[in-house]
Image 1: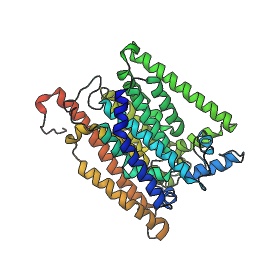
Image 2: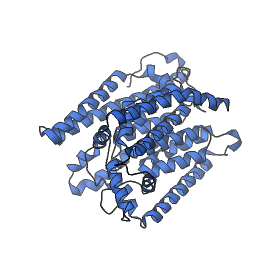
Image 3: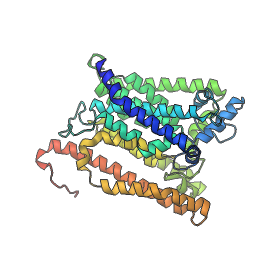
Image 4: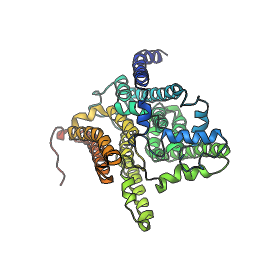
Length: 425
């Protein structure tokens, strides 16, 4: 109880400041949310707040929200937002909802950081584990990240996915595997791709479960949790069917991500490639792209088995680059997880290059899009080029973090090699 009181006292000021900052931006720049909502860097066809409003309008008028071919989001979001006053007339209620979700995400990050799992897991304890930031600092980095703030103001629905993923990790660390699987099921229901986080999350939950609940084998534990996720998803799908009266939502919500039928530009790598793709090769390359996205899960979970939290962080970075419809919300989640690994920062080799590349593309990306769409002095290649730079910056950071985690593990096994240069032969 004292620990909970200390947690509240430590974070109350931080959460209040983050809330006030967002409310001040809403109050003094009333046109900013609608401006950001239209940005392709933040809103995608499967997360856009404007598309959610379109689906909500149809839902409130007893028309299937999927009839218009515009709404590609989960059905259960509709009754949630129908409880709020009309966002066009009373936007403050939607703003407050998104602020609360941001604070819940930051609170989960706080708990993950305070657990010390990043530096000392069940099977691995880093020699650098004492070089870490407190949960307060990690939560502050997330809340005051410009990507997080812009995402909150633009109100895409993937903030709910971010919150669910972070709570799934936090619950796994706290020794509550069922609650962790429940949160992951909700994230999967909203965005589909979090299902790929299941293997490392099961490993994390297995390592962190309480001794009194210790299951005899990892295989049995994994089986129980897979059943739990399947059951939770079945319930969510069943309720969605009762809500919409058909299974049409499966095709509209998940089929559009699997087949990439909406080629609206975004900061990802898929849209331009499939704009130029001949139809006869489309199915093959869709399979290749999805295989590429999912193939990292098994290798990373096996190779870095001793540090499942590191696997989850690296995978979130990979998803932010290679998923079908990425946005800066995915980058903000990955960048929120990276400070957990403060102890391996001295081992990073390209931190300046990756940071500079991300900042470069962040500032120039909107300009390139404006020159293409509005000024007419550029073309699709113009904007796609800067998205390649954006992906390059994230790729450098993901690969560098992977190297640092593996180097830290290697130096513990080979103390005589600490500080020495290594070369790949």
